[in-house]
Amino acid sequence: MVLYYAFTFPLAFAINNISMGIFLLVAFITFKKEDLQFQKELVLPILLYVLMVISYFWSIDYKETLSALSKEVPLLIIPLGFLIYKTNTTGQKRKIIEYYSYAIVAFVLYFSVRAIIRYFIFGDARMFFYHGENDKDYGLVPKLLNAIHMSVFVAVAFFYFFTQIFDIVFD
Image 1 (cartoon, rainbow, N blue to C red):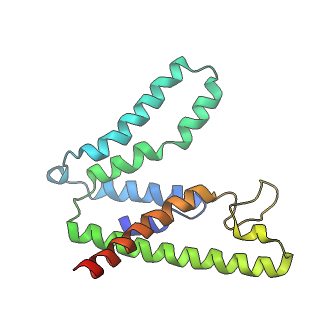
Image 2: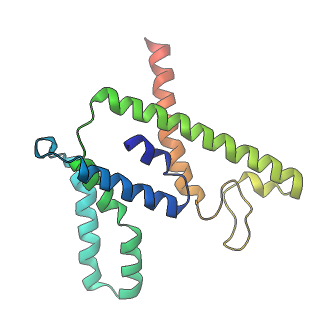
């Protein structure tokens, strides 16, 4: 289930939200009191979201703050899901990161091929960089996905492969 959710990170916002809801639902359904373990790493994003909620009361623009809070709900939901989801072993976590990294490679290949095809169609080198404006879909990744978010997802995969190469070279 965690792997399924990790695969949907780079997809459209709606798909990601649906899979996040399914993840949280499965976490609640499979919840057992003895599986609950306090993990400070998961509490920190929850506390950050609580601070954001509190900031609503001293905000200048309540409407914008409320809109931003709804976009940041994953800071609350994802850690909550992992707090109540059954504990993963170190081996399971490594497998999740491994499969996630290979899935990101597939996304990178897809967007690279997409950029090459679009370059030959439009003759515009912007197809290999960043993303376009809201009304124009040029760039490496679609505007709704956001190139900065995609670069973070790719960075996680990069560090997985980097550590694998590092282990091979220095072992």
